[in-house]
Length: 364
Image (cartoon, rainbow, N blue to C red; front, side, top):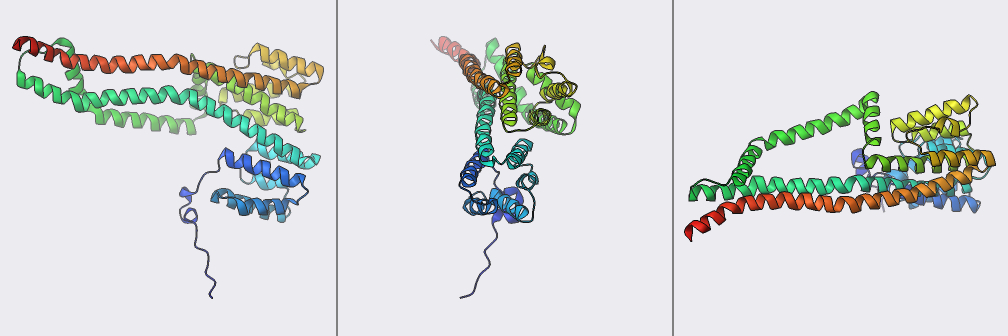
């Protein structure tokens, strides 16, 4: 029998088709790795086993590369650091602290919890943003469909009957004609604006800072974004401090992974103040992002020497706050969206039926 070379995976031929490594993949890997390390298996063997059983081709290749780097003499943290798109600064620095302190299994378990909590927060924030956007898009799509496809049929029917149309009906027909004439330009304009916004966010730091600031100051959504920021900041910093990462390094990493330039700037300011001898609570006083209650609890944690426990309590509290805020937002927006959608479509339909009533009266 001839030995045939294994055919290449499609993702090797077309890299852009390679599956992404999800948070779930990372959490499962982290938990399994912790169990193996706790059982006393060597790092290289752990990586080999987990790479072999990994179904995600992208992650499988990354784990094999990490294994090869570790075999070549790199530390586990350094090997992970060569893949920043999958293992961020937080992951790499906590692993480094675990290697130095000889508590890698404990650190990995903490990391898994941290990742799960962070993903839950991200989904909550995304859900709060996506729901109203989705309903709005559906409502607009229905209205546009009526104006572009349905109204012209009615218009032709009314022309056949002749006579003067009621004011609301004429307004809707005029709107339909205008939309049919300019819808292509409108769609092109929307696409151009979205593309320009995305590129500006990617390339211009001042623009990204201003848009991040605008997001934080939004009437309802801004409050949720701030609560998510507090929960993420306190939980991440608590995890890092409890794992032996120095406070200044921890704040630097938390700032870089904040996901919002305004919050990042505030945390970097806090870090600078601490390096000059101040406590964590002092520079956070009067913050527009971090609420007074959180600052007071941090101050108590510093005074009593129980900073890690206090940060975890704050994170748990604001996790619940985000839950409540998202639930409240959804409950508030549902009737508003239904009234908007029903009112808009209902108005168009009534405007279209007014001439029919007039024609019926004439015939009678």
